[in-house]
Image (cartoon, rainbow, N blue to C red):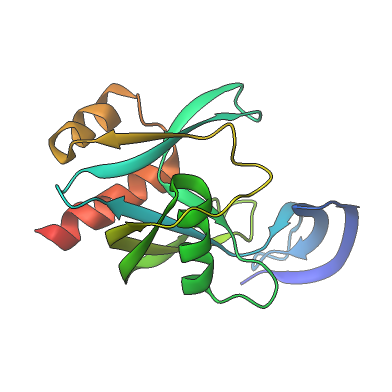
Length: 174
């Protein structure tokens, strides 16, 4: 276990904060940890009535390209993870699930970030769009289940939460 000796917040933004921790390692040596503080989020594997996965394609500034991803987003103040999952579904793909099943959860990048993703499976989708400021640039992509593994192996799907979510789903379905 590391012991925190000091903590300094060096940036605080709308979505993330950055802090620098000075820690003492079990060996007695001191080290520095740069930590991105990020609120918990949801990630949703959406499956339509034919068993196809409903993904979104969107440009991600951090990597400078469009990515193919599962539905995901932040949990707003006063929301629980399930409420956030339904809202994100409505905003990003214009559907709400009649059935929402928790698949698990995971840290997105525990080496430097506090973000935890609550993972859900959404089925029995019903059209019920909800407008959001940041969703006009999101394209909905319906992908046959049998194509998903090829897209991951080829690198066409290269987003960690999407790969993790799909692997959870494939294990859940077997």
